[in-house]
Length: 515
Image (cartoon, rainbow, N blue to C red; front, side, top):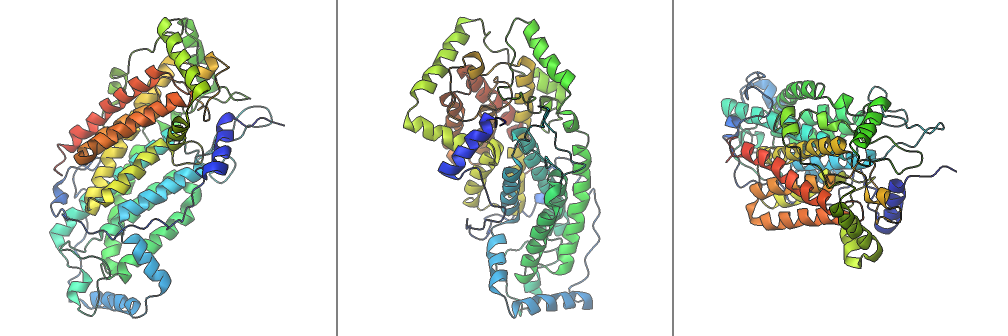
């Protein structure tokens, strides 16, 4: 019988103990209050987009007057729905009223968790590679591992932000009021504001998100579209937008998506897997320096996870900067410092406490979960709810967070595969980890780098909780030492590197016009 890799085995155990490796795609158990922003950010059309040359790069035609017969028919559609709202429709209103960016981020996290499953080996001992050209065949595309997930969260967040900046530009230009302000017979079923209705911000969000998610998770296209149709229905029933408001938002969102997708098609992600010859070269190059190269501990050996993700084009700086900010080499495997750090890992493996095990489990974010980037998205989402952001500010903040996380992942994977440093359990087979062994080199720690970047950006956005975020990042980092997966140098340098990348996002935030 073939041996299932340690990582999958660890996740199976955690399913039985914690049910943490499985997440429903349609779980509405988490209730949030309706979005009711303190500041509706009427000037957001002046904010600096990430990829658009200008907020009005894609033209949007003026709406019909609210006295037009066609518009009046749209009002009648709303009134027809409101005469007999069913329990299921009320549930839709309750769910989506929490906010478009929030709910689509949740949906995306569930998609990542669903697809965060490494392919099983072929009969000849090789491993199949998921193909976007044939997403329904085995292995189903994508394998949403941490680098893939970090990039996916970033592209969706950037697309939502740029689309909303454009939407708010046209809202101010056309200033068509919401339907409940035109016809007193229409009841607003969610909190109201003075924000113009055309184009619908919700429609803009779901339209651009649908296009991005169909690219990133093509096997789930039908489910994604079903959620968008539900989202559209919510806004009409709630009396917040007419169908033409929604259509305008959809057109704008789709137009912005074309530009974001074009960028994604040329960011080098398609080359991140590499070839057998390139994988062998990583190993031989490291061995030639006198160091011990990383090898997969799975049986049969699995190729390294996306070893050339470090060459993917970042959002916050250029690819030359990825190389320029690369950390110095880790302690040599022949050094006393390395032996000291290896002994520390061995000590934790043999003497881990119950509290340390709890920390390891909490931050594991392994197979079947929404990954470390998703964990930080969940932290942000829960905190942002209490801060009463507008949709566009939600999008801006999630874009800053996820650009930092993606670029931190790029920097981390560049470092990992440049030094190709072995894991502790490779150097000392008596070390038994307290969670699965990831299939890529040790230095620097991915959890630490992701967490350092996320904590830095969240501290900028929500300074009242800066200490909490930094303590969380430290705990996420040290969990990897407790789990016997990383040396102390991996984690300490990873945290520092993550903060360095996060600072690029903070610098952008200070100049994007949203402050």
